[in-house]
Image (cartoon, rainbow, N blue to C red; front, side, top):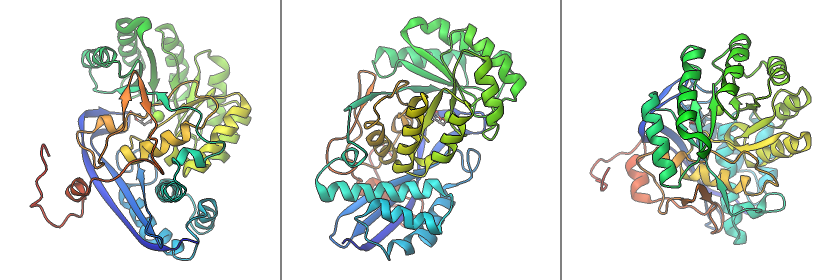
Length: 383
Ligand code: MUC
Ligand code: MG
């Protein structure tokens, strides 16, 4: 039996290495909610809940995630045995609907504690445990400039960091977007897989035109071309085009996963632990996809190191990961708040091996980047 001794939540804001241009927002920084839970045995677990562009991507904001945890989830944690992670999350689910990102942050911290208690990486606590120690990682080209994106992709190939590139489109007219994708694919050729994410930017007519043109320029897949609720239209587009649709915003956990599979709305799922409501529901999304013959891709909410590690532990357990992952979040940031960064090498991310999530806060950096920091006399090197 492990009881709650302490829970602390805080928002940190970290600058991005360059503006990250998406259909709905241009990011100059990433804001993440971090949770630290200490149990009655003194074991500490950490978790992350992150979204993109304030309230422009989804219906949870960093401020709202923190409020949901502090005001509604923390009191529930005072009444349960924290060592039973699935049961704790079921209790939370009974009293807190939706709020998937907040739930994900708390569940990750509990899994971190569970792994540390048992002396095993979090991946060993999910289904049959870890099946792979590293996984392919895509990079998103989203500078907004074709030439800059090509130079960035060349540098990534040269450094053997990424050979899968996702391009963010949907903001400009369809033809201009496709010309941008075509120019990048022509420059990279067979050295890289080029994919696009429209972030719901098109209607069905634009998607019909866009998907046909994208197939012609050698694009490998089209992520969430239209509105997330338009499952019937996703199914019509999937039936009409050979280029596969990957569902992202449409997937908020197992119920959506089942509905999209039943309606043949997508051939690939971008699985995100935050959007699904945690590692366990995201695992269920993966199982539904597998059963339906839908390909798997490990998605990101552009989390920092803690959320990226939690995602990697889950994706390491999937029998199939046909489309790789995009767990590059920490690489988009100029700063980090952990003691040891994750390892990226040979186009892959290595899954941490120490107990729990396998990552730890650097207390000085954390204190420095907390939005609610009270002192500014702490000066970090390079900060
Ligand atoms: C999204 O919609 O997939 C993932 C990678 C990236 O650049 O943005 C995100 C969000
Ligand atoms: Mg997406």
